[in-house]
Length: 168
Ligand SMILES: [Ca+2]
Image (cartoon, rainbow, N blue to C red; front, side):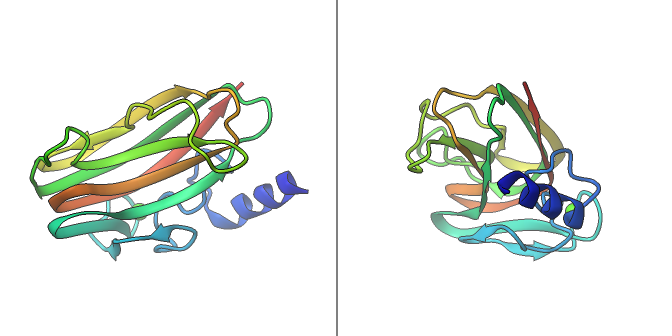
């Protein structure tokens, strides 16, 4: 039943999505299906009409995220997306910048496998840049929490066309 629901959602959402399990990765339905903790829709998109934009005037963690169930038997996942920066200052820690990142979580929503490498990150002012990373799914992982965020620093990051593709 779960898989049927996911498949129906994907059919209804977007033909552009590379995977049936990430919904509205291109932000063409604005912030629908994303949990928002600091981000707005912008027409300054990479593709289509909309993207998500996150601006901090003082250092804090701001962004959007989405939790995606991992189909049973999946071994790898490729996450890709487009990211753009405007006046992003490097934070105190090396992970404090503009980023598309993921965590793996178990059935109890605890993180498993430690912090994986980011999908992509940037500082300063940069034009739209494609980022991509393929992950081995750690043992016990049941879901992926995927975020576009501005990590405890100032500036503006914009994300668009985020896609997720599983392989066995
Ligand atoms: Ca878009």
